[in-house]
Image (cartoon, rainbow, N blue to C red; front, side, top):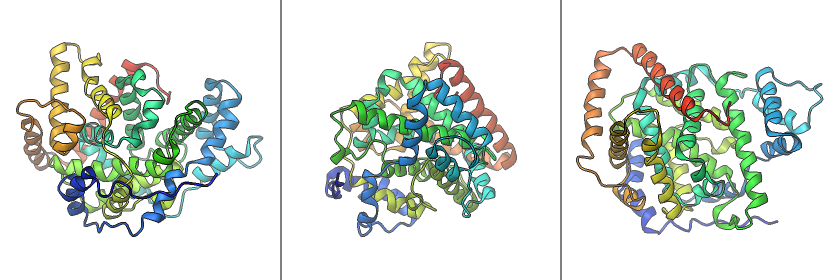
Length: 398
């Protein structure tokens, strides 16, 4: 079947122009020094109809030939001990692990370590950025959300969905976790196969999937945009919240996510090296995405109400206050227009908490050493993850 020819059909739409001419997009251009244009659109657009065929074949050969728990245990063994040419296993498994066990020449684990330390050092601001900017901001892109809706993410609940996202993020951003056979490496491979399993399920069961407009389910271009969220958008959020970082840490963050993207099967030419490149790639991708629809609003409100549903905090007033703080951060980090489209509630004094964080961060950075902040951030983030895992009990990763 011939692939459709994709055009930047939303490049003249108000939501696109407002974002890039007066909103957060304009700020990203200023932040990164990017030169945005559509001259390279055709080099990227075909990835809207591209997907991880290696991962899909592994799922067909391993997960669809036995029970899910048995398949998961088999894959875990390969991840933790490695595979060799003389192993009697499907060719697809040899290809997958041949790729992921071979560390590319461009990988610099010292640089990755610096990026991981930035994620830990920024402590709760990293978690705020992840949740109240990267995740909820992503819901404004209607086509990107379609796999979540089709796989009934709303029924699964925001607590479990957030727990699994946090589980993945924490484990790939720890020191040395991306070394082959380590925890972050394991989570990247498992995530890759979860995506393939979901994609095959969508293609088999959803007869209404609109490939022409939505692209392939969990396609390579959408995956690029997701991991630009974890790098560029995340970094800009830390900046807005008053965190400072060295050029080496900034390079490290992009390098970390480039290697995670490689392990996830994203084509290497879709993985940006720096914020300038990431902004230019992101600009092209947003031109094929319409603004929020009713599904976007449902996903955003599900995430906001997670604070009320989550039993980690004992008392109802604590949960309501946490929801209020997340709403405040969302209004501070996202464009007002995006918040209005997602129907984020307008609350009183909504900029007070995030602006006070900026002041706190300036004092904290001056009085506490970098090493102490990394150690404290790692401890606090692991505690948050532990609380979530104790609440949700089950996870696709465990």
